[in-house]
Image 1 (cartoon, rainbow, N blue to C red):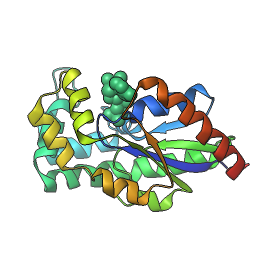
Image 2 (spheres, protein in one colour):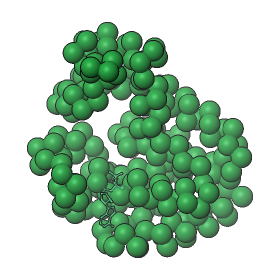
Image 3 (cartoon, rainbow, N blue to C red):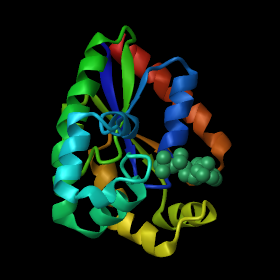
Image 4 (spheres, rainbow, N blue to C red):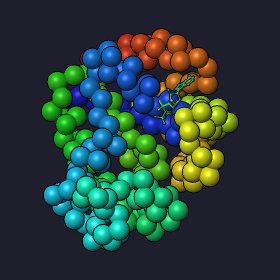
Length: 197
Ligand code: ADP
């Protein structure tokens, strides 16, 4: 049974980059977004429920969920967002905890964008936050081609830097150079091995 280290951070903050650095050290990384996509493929119970609730208009020509359109709907409406979360979060949560329980490592990383907002941080042995100022995140996301209005919509649904840091056991600062990430990850890896060994 591996201890659960919940990893989170605001959009554009570098959470994925940090998760990749842990994976490079051989740590199991369970990604909530990846699980969400898999469990809502055509043919799954979640796919059926989403189509039932959001209408056939969110299915693309290949018969899959049009995730960009679904994203636009849920980021613009809290009730719709909660509806989608009520369909997806319970099975994602169950799968993550189950896989952590069966993992042979000392700890694993549970990469969960809404760890703080959903209250799931309480179920983790440890909470790790990737911290990066809002301005820097907006700049990086714009460079990646995201529109300001879209960035704003997503950020409005997320906790603030202050709220995330308030529940963090550990913080990785990613305001600086990408090369600064790896040494911070290595240090934390040593800490976790010691804590959960
Ligand atoms: P998240 O998963 O938190 O949304 P990503 O890890 O995908 O964030 O990073 C967002 C974008 O910023 C990516 O294009 C990534 O390559 C880039 N990025 C991450 N860290 C840095 C950094 N320290 N300096 C510059 N760009 C960065």
